[in-house]
Image 1 (cartoon, helix red, strand yellow):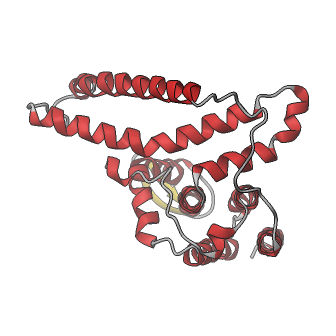
Image 2: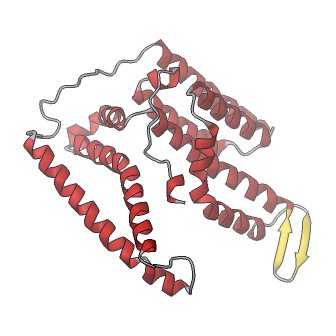
Length: 268
């Protein structure tokens, strides 16, 4: 299950999506998230799915990687679907048995809720798949640069986000190694009561936290040895510039948002 978590991974490439300015990708992700929540009809949802599939195809990202990233959230998705299915009333009553009542509106709400979660996760993964952590840091810092006037530590916040994304795959790999080592010593994580399973996680969490703090200390030492002083006086090897490709991407994102709003307004 841990190996299925793909958040933070980067797939190098030279596609049109990879060549886009990272600021454009961040802004388009915000537009995409708004569009996903506005898509409340089948036509608008189909339009968002087509947009996501098209961008994924242009980025040459394997669809199995997108599906693989959804596996760790399967329980959460199913739990959300069940709650909306049985606790949403409206429309025609389809099932009335004991405490379970299923309405047509409940089925529709559960469907759109599950679809929204999957689209949100896939869209976020697509950003990390096609953008390196360094590019994301630079883009976030440039977008939040106006906040420096009110003394917000923009560079430090962007650096923290970059380091967090960078070490997610490392921590997942470290956790998998610890679990394998504990299983080799006879540890059992799959049987017993819930309390027993929780206690069995202690031999995993303790060395994982120790390893994480050790890595953080080594990283801090390495940054100090390289005379890191934050964003003051820092130069960049690659200067971010908007191109015609970014303008076209903004136009496509705006067109998608406008189309979804129109479809939502007319109830199509």
